[in-house]
Length: 318
Ligand code: TXA
Ligand code: MG
View 1 (spheres, protein in one colour):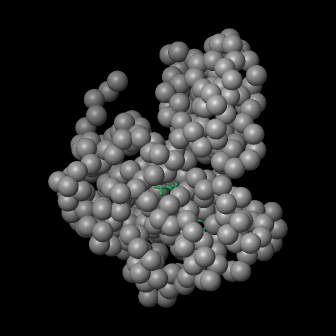
View 2: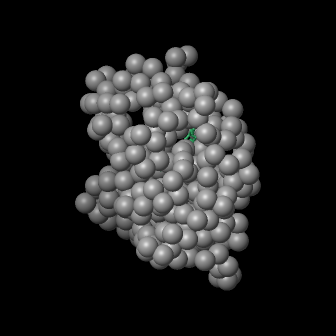
View 3: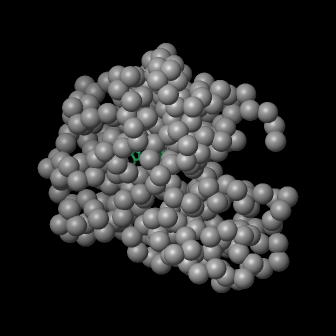
């Protein structure tokens, strides 16, 4: 292990004040949310937002999610459609991101939305994240706090391992409860389009929207999300999917009843929510070339959060 140079501070009143003050000065602060850790910066400050892209090595065409403490702050930035209001009433604060049309005079760096006319917004449920947003008192852009293309962090140590020296403070709130990034839904029109499966199951969104979610990119009416690059969320080791047994040198990650030679299990009881919370932590832990040559993952049923887990695994494997 190389030495960590960025300060990792336990989340408390003092570190939250420090974090908010750094954000107001245009600096980068990693903070916990219920989904994954975010790399935050003032969304209205061009230089601060540019620092995010620089620290992550993120392509400039991939827009960021803007995090806000309440609905009033959302309404200052974007046009809230009737569909968006229904989804917000049901799922905010929480693991849902809504893509909406940007208001002409919104105080947002153009870099945040990579030149698009829409902005992705989210009200996180994590108490520490909400405190930080209120104290910073401005929209905070925050992608997952990992180097571009790599696994998202669900613990403060994951952030340090991926971005050490490239940010100003890491607020440590312990492991993330959901463990998967938010579900991203385009709610600019009357029919919602799924841009990224995530911490809230597509079925739950369909129940509120009263119809099937169009999957982005599947037809011309559904715009694709620029961030949905095929290879993404990738650990360093190769990944093999739908594995029933471990081959030589492989770390097998099970799901449900244990298989022979399993290195870890996402959820012995076969619960997709528990598996989501464990996914990135186990991948981070087993991504160790000194111990394994590759990672194999047992089949996970394609329902509820299983769809989002399989989406991440397919990207990690490609
Ligand atoms: O759970 C999460 O969403 C975490 C936490 C920190 O909130 N954030 C996160 O951000 O995962 P990021 O940057 O890693 O992923 C943002 C996704 C990308 O796929 C991006 O392309 C999409 O949201 N996105 C952002 N703005 C968009 C827009 N205006 N139109 C379409 N897609 C957009
Ligand atoms: Mg990300």
